[in-house]
Image 1 (cartoon, rainbow, N blue to C red):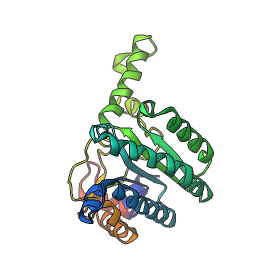
Image 2 (spheres, rainbow, N blue to C red):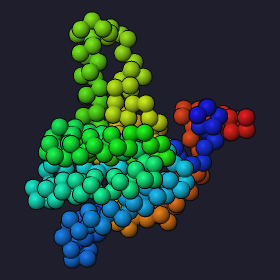
Image 3 (spheres, one colour):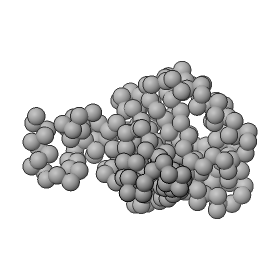
Length: 250
């Protein structure tokens, strides 16, 4: 995408979402927290459908953070089972619709069976191009940056790289989303207004959108409202508003 096209875009290429509020949604209905996580799968399907319809090329969903291991063991176990079930059932549907699946995060902490299913799902969908769906699982933004720095430190220690050759671009090339467009639009449901250690590096110039809707309540209409908000914003990337308008007119 050229600089002029970037400044003139009204539709994000990449949307990143923190899917917050499943447990609260369930509690409001007198249901166990896990029922909210299952209900949230409908919103995931709605987002995938909307991205395919709108021509949005990348969608990243924060499914399980590195901090979520602190939750009750029963809930964590149920979430892992839901993840495996989704890989069994949903991946075939994604594949039929041309969706490529990628999972980012420290997957080594997952059970071997889950790791194998992730690998198979990624291999099955690797050549699809209608939409890249990125699932952040056991992911943390600080972990991501630390892993990138560690990889570069190894190269420095082996004499392959000088310390003064390390640039932001080089660090970025080692991050989980290397080679993909940075998110243009970040959405968080559930009323909280923070990014919670999600894509810390990649969200540097991302437009932020917060909604009080709980994740199971966030459907295609709510997503359309978020896209409308994005379309009405002026993205400056350090320039003045006048400079941006000149680029739009080119």
